[in-house]
Every structure is written in C-alpha cells, then in structure tokens.
Image (tube, rainbow, N blue to C red):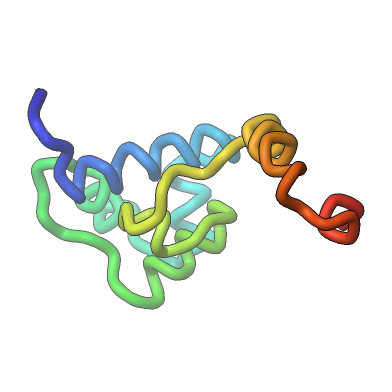
Amino acid sequence: MPRTTEKEEFVRRMKELMKQHNCNQKTLCKACDIKESTFSYYMKESDPRMPKGGALANIATELHTTVDYLLGAQPRKMQFNELKVLLADSSMDMTRAQITE
C-alpha cells in the first residue's frame, strides 16, 4: 500500500473536518478571507500549493482544530467516547483529584 503524502493527508483531514462541521468551501473561504480559486488549489492532492501562515491559522480556527492537526503533525482527533475509554483504562493510575477533575 503506497504511503500517504503530506498533501493527501491534509486534503483528507480538511474534507473530514468540513463534513464534521457542515462547512462547505464557499462558507469556509468567506470566513477565512481566502479566494475560492486559491482554496481549490489547496484541496487538489496533485497540486503542491498549501495555505501559509495566517490563512492556515484561520482555517484551523474555523474548523475547530489546530494547524498541527491539519498538517499531519498531530494524530487524528479522538472522539469523546474514545477518550472516555482511555480515561477509564488509566483510572487505576490516577489520583482521586484527577478522577474528579
């Protein structure tokens, strides 16, 4: 199986988050002050262009995530139920204050 490129991962994560937040390209572009034509380049796996600095930060903010996550430097976001399971598994190693928190 071929390795996923950084750009493919970026596009996959963007699509996933846009779907999760019921956000289409037009809405996201308007909120982030990005031209739709420019954004379409960002969403093409075959195009090497990626959003820079402020644009990337604005996209991350609008999609309630981090730049690190969008760029693949952070593992996928966990769902609340997954976090509950992890916390339950770790509860034996937690103090009473941590459990209450």
